[in-house]
Length: 287
Image (cartoon, rainbow, N blue to C red):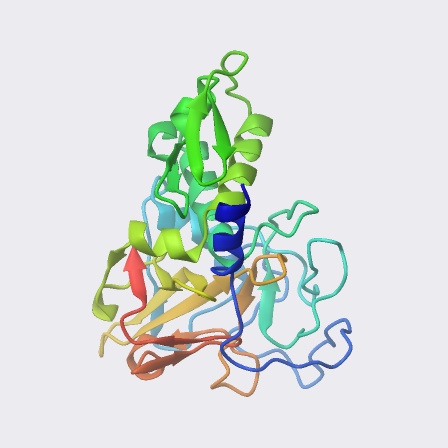
């Protein structure tokens, strides 16, 4: 097991820009009025964040991944990002909202894991069990449909195989145990090979900005709005990070008021600067 674990340590989420090292504190409420992009009473991504004037939120069918993400519940406005152990993240200036997605008390649900968690939760809710599968860093295909039928994954060094379990396990608790196994042996280095490159003009909710490697990072597109006259596109981005932490909506560092909307036209250039990471052009991928 040491070999594959070492590989994972070399391919975890990592810093590409400096972040604050000041002591963590609870975010302070906005004191100069509420900006027009924010509805503090909103309880989902699409009700918390309003597109700017002239932009219209893209809509997706209820069964699509895009709709699932746009309707993700968020915690009350001003909620701090916490690490997997309950402590405050040191940088509380990078997020505009925190998703209502739990983090188990282990340092596992980092950047790529958060992306896989949201994708898997969507497919599980849609009962598309055969579509839930992720590759480990060594190429092993961890299929949830086999896990659901009762098979289990055995890891011995860098060798991974299926073994018989104790019968079918179709419940949600077992699904979460499957995800824990995936988070332990998959990461940006494996996920980047599963996703398909996309042009930024084709960006949709559910797409991923990703760099695989040592270290790498991944953020997911949570919402999208379009300017009807010009075709300019805005997106909201979400991430977890290292150590494992709450999934949160990122602010756009190019705005001074905490505005989380990123312009694909203006902000997605040769470098894509997010609140805590910089991606190179060509990082956009889809399922």
